[in-house]
Image (cartoon, rainbow, N blue to C red):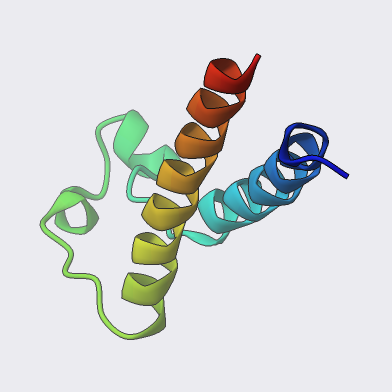
Length: 76
């Protein structure tokens, strides 16, 4: 099995993880903020603990997905 035939499966796994990472992150823009309400929740929020781990993991997964895409492009 060549690396060229393995990369699509890696991309599928990375895309599933990327979607999960994005969906697990806290949404900063709530429905109340969209209509001008609840101005206190629209302030600065520092990521801590598990939220920070998910945020950094999502960035790493996105970079790996882009890297595998460019690798597949170069191999063909």
